[in-house]
Length: 125
Image (cartoon, rainbow, N blue to C red; front, top):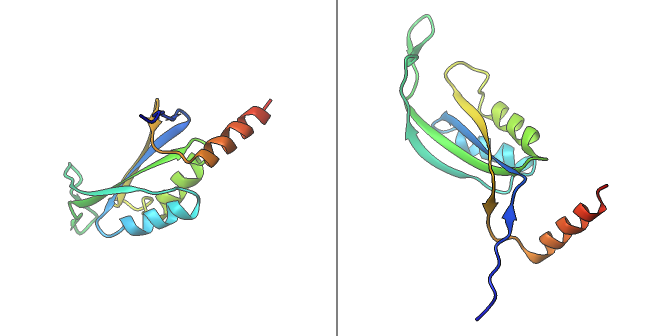
């Protein structure tokens, strides 16, 4: 029987971004350009007190796309900013983004990546 081992990641955060339907691909591309490894997306429906915005009562589409990206805390600010800009979240009604600190996460990590991380950690003061 082979020995199985869990590599626990403790220095990571989850970025969750809710955008208008059709914007997720651009947001994911922007996140990947600055180092995010991948993303999970799904469709959702939203509602709230601000379903109508603007002087003309323009309706905001209730169909949303939700993007989850796990990043190291070193990458967090850079990826967050690029996702915010790509989703046009500085425009009313376009969406919302937030960060959740993760206590621990686990996934397959290639041996060469683990060795590189261990050597860089041992070189820190």
